[in-house]
Image (cartoon, rainbow, N blue to C red):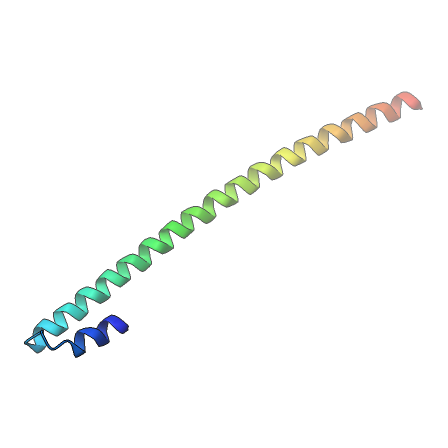
Length: 78
């Protein structure tokens, strides 16, 4: 929005068509940056989710091993 306002107030730009072209280019550039940022954040979130899933799987495995030990020793004590 600020970029558009600056372009509209710029006295060095002669024609209305030139101003409209620059506004259009600015909007396209901003949209491209926004889309790229969203993609980057989505990839970052996906990596984070994969790390959480891996950690969860490891914790479940450890818990299962500990559970097996407890039930094994419980049978020995009986």
